[in-house]
Image 1 (tube, rainbow, N blue to C red):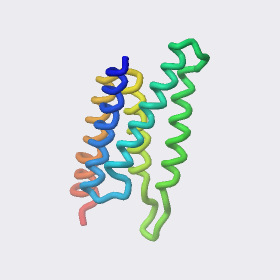
Image 2 (image 1 turned 120 degrees about the horizontal axis):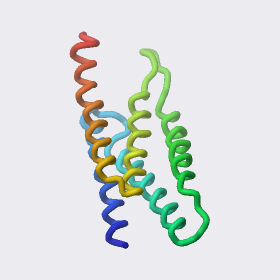
Image 3 (image 1 turned 90 degrees about the vertical axis):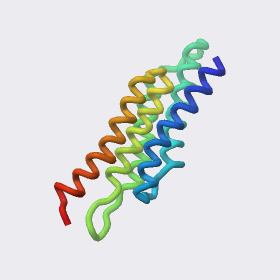
Image 4 (image 1 turned 120 degrees about the vertical axis):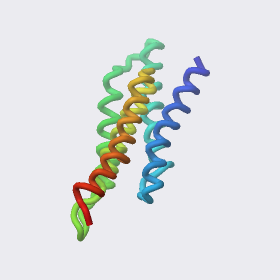
Length: 139
């Protein structure tokens, strides 16, 4: 059981780090550490609630979804701000929220879902970011 938990925690951290690495390359404020911690934290919360449920302690597993979503809403709200050039931080907030969901999926042992979501997140951040910068918003 401990090996499984270690695997899940490291997997969530790694998948979060992949997304954070993309942000580091783009020199964004939230990067490798932030995304790794978000995925790790969501996974840890999920593992804790599911373990409490299995051990007979009353813990509603669906409460973890609500807690993570609310917590990420709070963090996401903190990274969105209005500057002179418009609103900034929306993509960061959305990526953090998605990274938390990836951590939750790993904690619930939905590995394929977590890996696919990580791939799609990177596709959106890299591919759509390129498309937006080169085609939709030419300078």
